[in-house]
Image 1 (tube, rainbow, N blue to C red):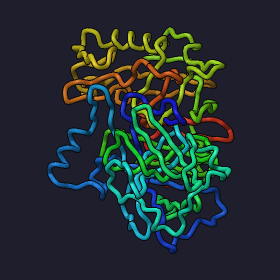
Image 2 (image 1 turned 45 degrees about the horizontal axis):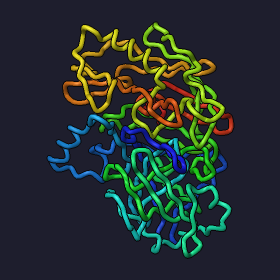
Image 3 (image 1 turned 30 degrees about the vertical axis):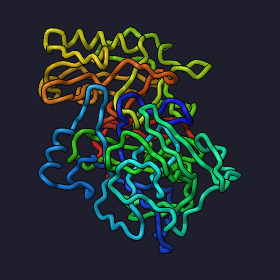
Image 4 (image 1 turned 135 degrees about the vertical axis):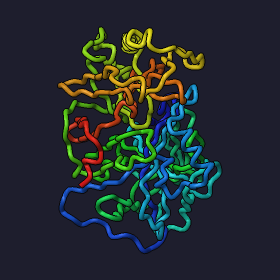
Length: 433
């Protein structure tokens, strides 16, 4: 999640899914779509450690690292990054870029040369001086006032700055460029003059694969707004490098199916109305006001693809924590991690020991439910310890966050005009045309 200066991601490391973008660097460009049908760009998403990714070395050491990082929880962070399905990518004339998707921000940015401070990435760093279609935006541009923490340099160019709560930052020139999408269903598609951040100074806890972030919030700079008013993502299994059916869909051709609930946007975030929580047949005793946003903008519940775990306001978390402890008491030995007070961890294995564990259900306004089985509710911290993937929120501005782990096994679709989010429980493979 991102805003101009307030929190973006939780102290848990952001959970990225990535798509393959290409930034054109020659005068020869891919033919843009002219079909009169509603635009529907489908791109596959795969685990960053997938053996299907051409950006991964397949030597024995890398294979072992992939195995041990498959569900890497390191006391105070969750990591489960994804990379794009890059099969068939020629890489010329465009420069491929791997970017994480984030519903909590609206800016698309990638690292650029000259790079004053950049993190490691798997693809070539984009060099705007070699592009015939790159254009810096001036400070006087009508787009510049909407940029994060806008500033002006000595050339009167629009400078952006964005920061993330996990300590990640990016700054550079706000510009336009032709973006080429490698899609799963329509081949190569060019979108001209897309506003993006050309980051010359970038720091953060990135995975060595990605080169930036693709914001999917409803802001003026979002690629979602440029391509229409709808988008969806379907995540089958966060921690399976071999699962090949995760996907992101952009454009007004996105299918809206399943139960739905209204959302409203505030500071670029998608807020939903959470009315209650059940564990199995037990409806927890939680006052719905716990999850409401105040008139001053504090609290509320945000849907976020850029945060791994789910975070609940204290008065919502405590009843859940008590119920989970009651269910596991006498069956599992608790493991204490002092670096994260209150984190419920136990000796055991999710896939073997939690079969038949009661499902958790988030009940949203107008009858929409998000149901979490054991694999979405717990994470295997290491070979012998699993932990609850829901924690008490310590966020300053947003009270609660529904993270991406809770959204596994769903196609989640956003309608920006209708202001509704749809939850369709489905195997992502069944969505493929």
